[in-house]
Structures are given as structure tokens and as C-alpha cells.
Image 1 (cartoon, rainbow, N blue to C red):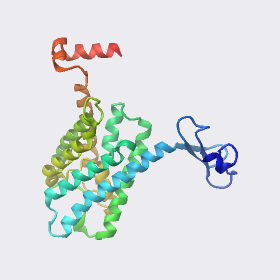
Image 2: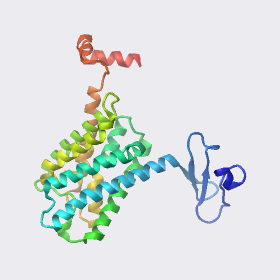
Image 3: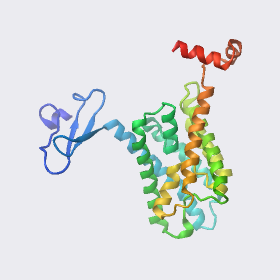
Image 4: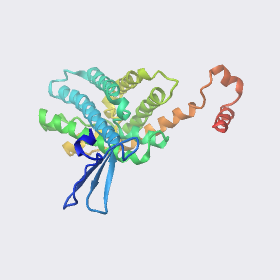
Length: 290
């Protein structure tokens, strides 16, 4: 297709002018993937691979629909005399997480959460150089969804869909840490361990979110996700106790990911583990084999 468009070797060039020059390279130039290059002049510019751009778009859309449905249920509940109820809001959050995991999980990994992205990076299951772009896509998706809800329902103060502690900041901080630890522990188990049933990852993660929102929602808002809190806060310009929802979920996700790594030390059956000796001895043997 690229050869047909260019009429020669498939390259798309534009003469340098004042502004940005777009240069698309096809697979004959870039092995394994395409790249889009933005050149500001003859000596400077940057390139981004098309597959990675697709991942960012998937993260943005996934986070958008996640926040639109979840925060939308909160706004409808506030505007329609509690018609949705807390169990209803919990179900909406759980279902939308499950649906979006199955929809784009095979494209971007379905993080939708800066805390999850950072936690994966600390465990070397996600490249650090891609973390800023993923977080930017997630926050952008959340902000756009919150803006959409504001346009639909108005910007009344009482219809704020963000998260604010109902008690003390410390109480919500501890609760956010624990429920995000729980969430990330489940994610690590069902999505990163090849011994788990991968087809059930969306169901397990969505159910965990549902449970967390059901009991932690009235206390901290059950954010578990800095992007979920940042989007409504940016649109409504309300940043009260915002640090709680940046520190708590991030620290909880990192701790949860590493906690699962501690028990992910072998793929041997239980009877062989107990016969072979201690945890450290088995771990040392496995590392030596690698």
C-alpha cells in the first residue's frame, strides 16, 4: 500500500519548511514496526512507533469510558435522589473495568491507572521510558470524560464526581493504600502469572474493584487510581486532599505488586516445594538455573 502511494520506495517526505514536517517510515525502513517522525527542522525532531501510539490511544479511550461510566453513575446518583445507590455504583465500576479489560487488554495491557503502570515498571514488567506517555494518556482520558459529564449534567458544586475523604486524610490514605494493594495483588496474580487462568483476568479485576467500592466508597471514595481522582479535580478545580489519592494508591500498588512477586518464586507443585526445603533455598536454586 505504501509503495502504491509513493510510486517509488514507500517513503513519504515533505520539504523542510517553517513548522513541523511529518515523515512516515514503512516497514522496509524500520524493522518490526512503523514509525511516525515529527521534524521541527533539519537537525531536530522525534519519532514514535505506530504500535506504541495505538497503545496510548487504547489507554486513553479505555480510561475515558471507565471514568465516564463510573463517575457518571456517581453524578446520576447525586442528581436523581440516590436512585443508583451505593451497590449500583459499585456494580457499574466493576462492570466497566471488566468490559474494558476484555476490550483493549490485548492492545495496551489495560492499565487505565497510573499507579498500576508505575507498579509494573518497578517490577520490570513495563518499560520505564513508556511510563510518562501512559500516565499522560490516562490522565487525558479521565479529564476528557469528566469534562463530558460536566457538559451533560452541568457544573453544580453538589454534583462533584471526584473523591474527597469523609473523615480524616490519614484514614483515607491508609484505606486507599490497602484497597489498592488488594487490587494490584489480584492484577499481578491473574494477569502476569502464566499459571493463572488469563481468560478470567477481567472478571477477577472487575470483581475486586466492585468489592472495594462497596465498602470503601463511603469513606475515601475508593479511588484506587490517581487518574480517576485527577480528572474530576482538574475539571472542577477542586484539589482538596488530592495528595491522599496520589500517594495512597501509588504506594499501595507498588507494595501489592512486590508482595505477589514474593510468592511468585516457583512454578513447582506444593508437594515438591515442601520437600525441597525453605523459600530462600528454592529461590536461590531458581536464580542459579536462570
